Image (tube, helix red, strand yellow):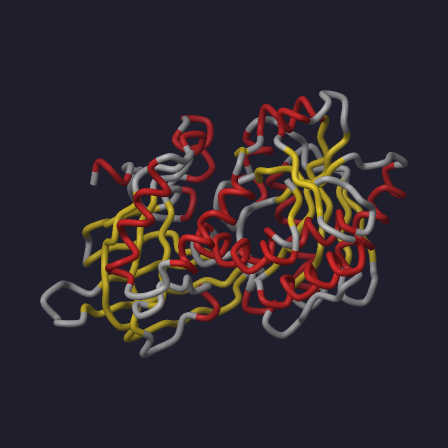
Length: 361
């Protein structure tokens, strides 16, 4: 399949839903992707199984605090320049481009990087959602080294990284993002086709388009959206989809700490018959609870949408007074493995409890 202009609206919409509040706002990246397709033509999407085992693949996307992306806008050239600089740095030609995460703006940036070179983009990503730290990618969990890696900032400055530790890489890349104004573009986790097949969360790019189409065609009250979403997720790599809360945002506060948007939102039910829902944020929506009762938590997906239209809302765009609905979706099975939970369980984010799967709550 090739991604054309007609697919971008649905891709942006569906990927924001899967981003669980993070991944960056897709508006400007979508405009840039439109320009890239107009200039270079449709972008080929290939299944991981179609890739040669000895192919050379790199993941490309933005790193930083999503709130900054609303002001420090990416340029048309950032992604392509990052890819070109990376190839020069490693002395190799990249055969295909992959996504960090199927999240908002980060689902579109790899398309822009690939377009000018005529490279294919892999149908899949490194998270199946959005998560805030590099060691939480499926690539890293499966043993892919984060470097050689390269970062490119808004002024065209370039920094390169070399370490075998993804945790060290995360600290360094986050520090650079802060020093560069809060947002950078990176090429990282280079891997062979074989390594990609063993580590990627497959099918998420094209699934995002289907999800966006479902949201667009059934646009309306969130309560009416539940059935179409359940039908779609039933035949996917994700678990069940639930509508867990409806109400009005009565408080939301985040601040940039260490390169992340960190804070909490509180939602009050429409009829005040239910306890308020608190949603903890670290770039993404990580935990939803009523009082001390956990309703759902990372790595399962927490998605906040506009109540009247079912349009998903990025965490940086969530505001006091918005009427919203909260969905929960079971994460891909990969993230329920013992190895993955070592880096994505609630305890990894400072919460004092173990992960319980959505269907068991």
